Image (cartoon, rainbow, N blue to C red; front, side, top):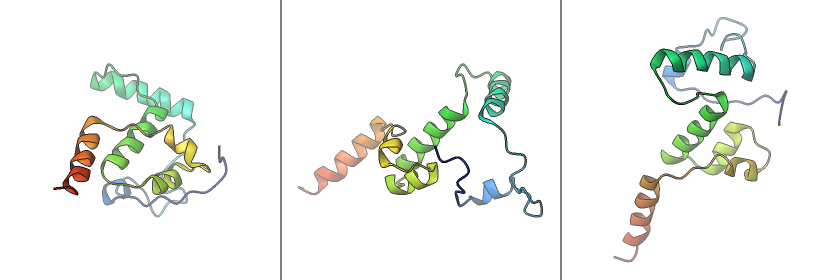
Length: 111
């Protein structure tokens, strides 16, 4: 773990709209994982989700979607704050659509 290490993560315009740049903590109060998970549990109940939402699952979802959208493993490693690429591989879940798309791209080389 890299506790205390500062990570720079570029924000999308939509994410930036949730920030308060005039505040000394522009992202608001930092929550512990436990408090975040409690909040996610409440949100899950409100939206009728059958999935037990957790911060850790959100990291996995982000990682998978980042790679599915064309992001590189090296950038993902940096965004997640991992020292080792091996740590990042734990977050890699490759969906059927990506496998199909990339195999199609590979096969097109020979056509």
